[in-house]
Image (cartoon, rainbow, N blue to C red):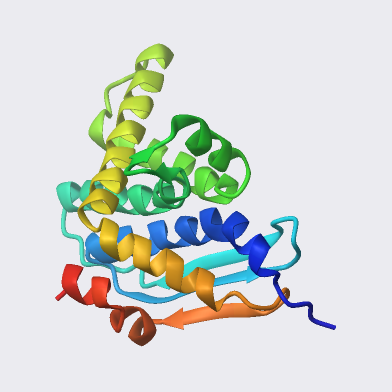
Length: 194
């Protein structure tokens, strides 16, 4: 039997809708076709599933376009944690780190693999472990900064999407989905992505 979400619990779930909105907005801003955004709250303790459905294909020709694609994809994966930790127009580092350990753990695992590939393409001659680790950290910082810049540029759309998804959460155990049409109808989305 489904249970209604108490309005008093909804503010606790805002960070989760911001997480999903971060993925969606950064993907859209970086030129990916985004189809849906969804969130299902399973119980009042924050157990949930969520995501954005997007087309990952994008034409690439040559190494530079491959590197650019990988950097964008990593930025999209990290954008969930950036969005979740976005408070008063900036990323709170402790919230960002915590998110990568819990809600963004799967995203973090994916970024780890993609960062290795990107590093190998950009720095094929590096053989010293300490230098490799520095290159990986620098690339991750660059990709985080891409996500931060896109959320900052599209903050009105990000805020409205997170609030709209939150407003749809009414019942535990029900997956709430916003289609591309639902999202594109939001005034701030229209303004940011004409």
